[in-house]
Length: 164
Image (cartoon, rainbow, N blue to C red):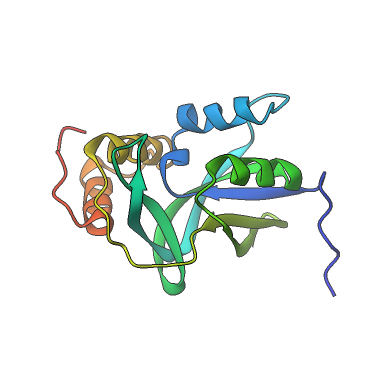
């Protein structure tokens, strides 16, 4: 049986939406009173699809969610935090009640969060998609713009501004 994870044990929080962008994720770190330098982070291939749902008043449209019931692929960015910090970030997000266990990374457990309904009824705004795009460019600098835009267009199911 696996050892229980303590609140001070390191885990990976895997982002797949606007928290892919370091500048955006820093806002959450500030709100949870994160101490220290910006967390170690690296690319992470999520074995599930993302979709856009609900309405965010901040973004004026749909936001990204993960469907852990549907195998697929999503680009992610793993941030190394303590388990307690992971839960503080989850609490700040608010609309993601379901914790998702992902495959371990470098010997540490990996987690993300999502909602419980997986319908994909909303369209994201260009502003929200741009933040995700900027995060993808930071995390996957070896991928060209067209690859990233095609990925986002396939997930968002909208035509994107090629000048994001």
